[in-house]
Length: 96
Image 1: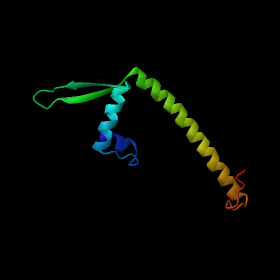
Image 2: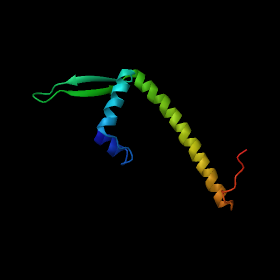
Image 3: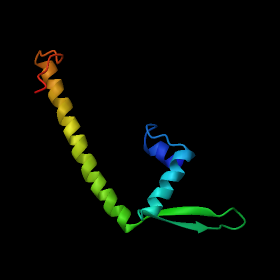
Image 4: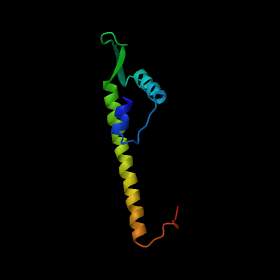
């Protein structure tokens, strides 16, 4: 799971085991994910996680919130960029 996060996150998301596993336990305690232990042959049992219905609902809400934040920040950056291209220094702004 750590390798997937690192590769999918283009190296930006770097979690350590000490961060990931407590997070997984909190998600499981909240009912957002479900876990099952499976033993494969003579290997140690492994814990497999799956997103629960409550987790899908929460993810949908968080994606909507995140998209709104990204859109707002993008608009702010575009405005600042336009101000800088219009000759404004950007150093003097009216905060009222």
